[in-house]
Image (cartoon, rainbow over all chains, first blue to last red; front, side, top):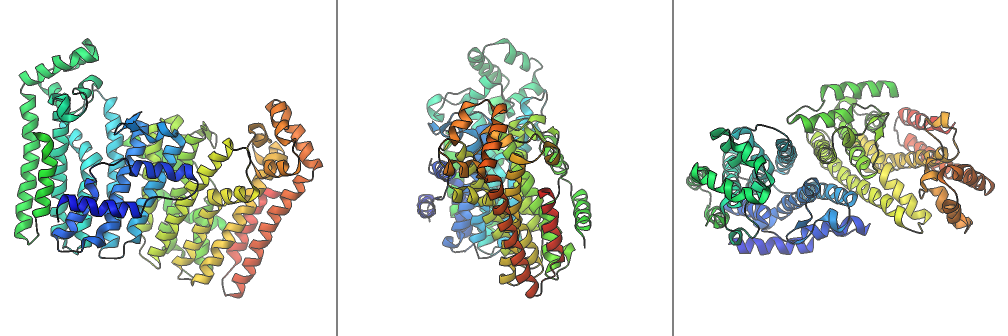
Length: 316
Length: 316
């Protein structure tokens, strides 16, 4: 099955399982955020995981749905915390409604994510619930770390990588591994599937940092240099501090707009652009190496390879 | 076992299972709210439920803990929504830390509530998880209803009762019923236990409305007439609108302070104080009637009777 086919399969499930209920002010925002679109990468990963391990994709749908619902819960609450006004060109939930409603709609999405797994009755339900809970806690920890970094003078590279792993990669790992569990895969394969998704998730996230700093506005669909304008503690900022003690002064001397091209030039001169690409490539190579192991263990890796290429599109 | 004994048992479990983790800014607020105290009525109900149905109380501790953790999640988020500065005389989580941290700490408490049930490995784990999820959604619905009522011109008595049942009573029902499930009770007993807790919860909540309007400040430990000052859509307000079309004008003509004694007098003259006591008593009688059924079905109702009396203390 191709990614487009998985996407379609999940979209049909989603439209058959749209959130409805009373009061409207609780369920409309839940429906709204779920229908804002997106790549649906988490449910797709789950379905790919099931098929790769010889399971029936349809069985995984409630689990796949839980991953997407959880992701949307985190978007609604993160948008409040980050004071984001827009998402995908439309008002965020707390802007379209209000903060109390956005808090509650997020809460109910989190409950509904668990509930979706509870409706599943196949292999390893308890294992999936336990992995999902561990993941949910890590996502909270990653978001708090991210907020804490803004106020901190110094952040280590290791701590930064740990933060983005928790904030974004672990849910990809949980999605793919849960799919494998649905198919009844053994624990060695489940762990490798998890690690594969973490590796490609980290690679993707590093490329996201790269493109934000060095990509053209057209290629990324938003103004480039956003992180530099914000003075965000990204991998580039952290590495720059390690290599040059003047880094912080660049961020205090210039206005946000003037800063972008100055810092871009400094970072290019320091070779940070290439170093970041190398980090992203290392994660990608890790992913490829795990893929090889999985293939040798009898897993059908075509879908996983397609996912890897799908997530790589943005690097070019 | 007496209520004091159940309280002690749960308190010991809680101190052995205090939330610890990194980052501190996530786990400290979770620990803080859990240690603010309170009656611990929900975990006590769960333990009472287990013992009443002949189960081993110790087995129910992780489930009992989940009910208390969920309750604390709802307190943290409700305090943000209600803009409450204090709880039990101490700053609320979003005041002591900030709103983003309070949102996240609440989210992680919700996850930890599920996780606590996941560590339980006795009777009816799936049944408990499903009841708990249904309850969690109802609590969200009740809170949204409560917020919606503030902006609504007319609220029916039925809708108001449904709101407080969801906002407060269902978690009591879930707690007691889960305890019965831990003991392996049959579904008829589980349902009766649930209904018993709903009835005494509703009675308690009605008495809370009564005391807020008519209780002396000393007896309730806060300024009486708070709901009248706020113009809150309580049972009394709703019934008053049904009986007198002048009700809304009383709430717009006077200043908040002058309004209290005026409205109290009007409501007493209309007999609303006694009508509300009657509603509370009806719920209490429902509870007593269910208690009798349970006793005839072989349930040890001493603990349930003690709970009923414990919650009645505030009526005198």
